[in-house]
Image (cartoon, rainbow, N blue to C red; front, side, top):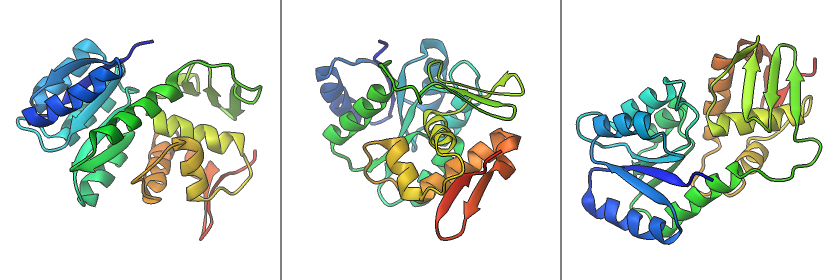
Length: 229
């Protein structure tokens, strides 16, 4: 299994701190000190995961994330954003652009490691129950084994969180799911994740897959449901 991580962070102390803890867990690391270098290395190295600071020289982290998500080769790479504590605006924008998770600064390096390991655990192939196969709705197909979504015979690049939320909705088609339920099923282990996060990812799914613009119904004061065909 690929356990490579690209750390895009301009502060040497933070890079060294993260490197110390992540190397102890056996991860292979590469580094970038500014946004332009970060995007370049993401494209050339194709790491399994990216830790991305928002406040970077040359190109900020949100622009780097936009570049990652717009490139078909690396669009699905999990990205954990490192954000300034209490800066909810940057976090929401990051989620809208497709960030998988965020950790506010100052952070515990052990928490970062836990978030990283949680993402890697979810990507490990495993023996799955029968329900974890292929789901169809009209011209939309979700293939769990291939981690692929196709709409009208074209692959739709989704982030890992968008994929998991769509899977949760398709498994529970016709049922109303609260935002908390969706978070629990899609994130598994979560801390510092806002209910608003679900709204952002749902908006992304509706934008990327036209069928879902009407098929995902917002149920006032309750949550969301995928309408039955």
